[in-house]
Image (cartoon, rainbow, N blue to C red; front, side):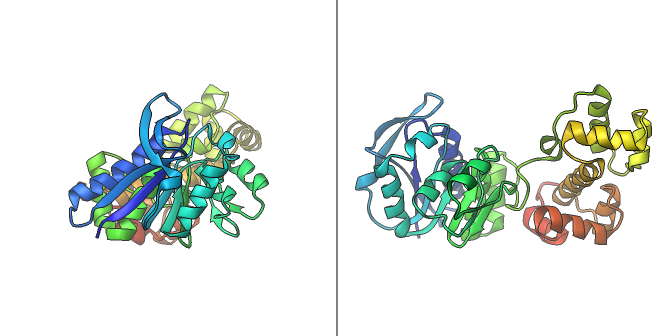
Amino acid sequence: MQRRVLIVVFPGFQLLDMAGPADVFATAGLLAPEHPYAVEVVAPGGGAVPAGNGVTVTAAALGETTGPVDTLLVAGGPALPARLADRELVAGVARLAAGARRVASVCNGAFLLAEAGLLDCRRATTHWLSAGELQSRYAGVEVDAEPLYIEDGHVWTSAGVLSGVDLALALVARDHGHALAGDVARGLVVYLHRPGGQSQFSTPMRAMTPRSEPLRELQTYIDANPGADLSVPALAVRVGMSARHFSRVFTEQTGLSPGRYVERSRADTARRLLELTGLPLEAVARESGLGSPETLYRVFRRHWRVSPGDHRRRFQSKER
């Protein structure tokens, strides 16, 4: 059965918000011809639609699009806030969503879903830079800026730009299993289907870059040596500070306490080991500096809302 995917764009949309998911669905159809997707691009008025980077795509007219829809996906882009007053765009999304099996957004495309009333009383995410505005503008939406994507009923929302690829891979996995989603990811040479509960930020991204060069070097040391003694006293010695002064300065310059930074760095290491190696959980816990399988389990649930074993079963590379 062919699944019809409509991607809604507008003048000034983010090209990757459209192209990333479109290539995921197209690649899934190539790898599994028995599970085809038909991707269509629609926009108010149709015709030539310029993306924010100057590339122009051809779209069908949103107002004239009819028929059953499997997946309605709304792109985002810097120009979107100015488009929220376009009643044709908002009404068109609301109309198509009413007949779609599921609805999704990429980046600040969540604003368009919210404007159409599709996120009322739902949990949703968007690009972390826009999360505060989404919450203040639409009080009925429960905004969570942390995850890469969120599923709430039949409505999916995702974070910034390339997280649209993660979202599309998750939709393919939901439709046809994680094996096909993994094959698509490898075919596109992208990260092997990150779970939605994973933060939008890797450990270095989640922390600000310190002004102090010794602290920048210390961050590199922590990320490269998860099994070392990374206690506050030991780290303070490495940068020649008292433990109390070090904790204050590190937190001030990175936005994370030393303990939180270390835990997140070790959690990232554990995630990579689970995906790329066949090490038993005891060894993963030891190599990542988390110590025991019990601690590994607690940290994994806290950061990614899944167990280490479940994460490995779903996302371990076949090419390790």
